[in-house]
Amino acid sequence: MSERVYLETSFISYLAARPSRDLVTAARQQLTHEWWTRRRSAFEVCISELVVAEAAAGDPDAAERRAQLIRDLPSLSISEEAIALARNLVQEAGLPARAAVDALHISLAACHGIDYLLTWNSTHIANAELRPKVERACRDNGYEPPVLCTPDELMGG
Image (cartoon, rainbow, N blue to C red):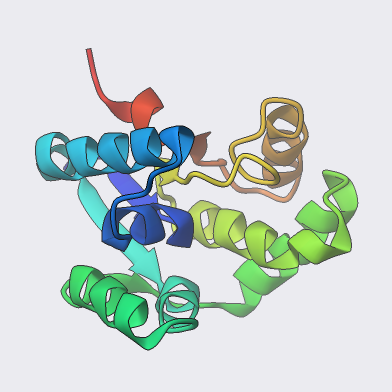
């Protein structure tokens, strides 16, 4: 069985976005496209109901591009266990209350036994300072945390 990757909404947004003039954003877009083209087939890729809802928000044209990309991806359901773990992540890992949705992405991946959570959100998800606290909180609540990473960290050897 292949390892599983949860694609958080920021990954989908970078993949669907029109090319940016900003150098950092353009580089992230390029890395996102490279991962999608070169590495996606090495994993079982999934999203969640939360990603579907977030991807549908905003500019209608961009939302349609995002919807096309995720249309055929398996979607994890939001369970009571995931909601409870997300609350615990906010409390135990010291995430700010405004990061409740980010905590839910992490908890969905953990509760469904996903190996990697792929994101460009380094504020509350792929954050080196928060990662040990998030991992500890997941384990303290009986779940193995996913590896929280950016596409460039999951490019392979």
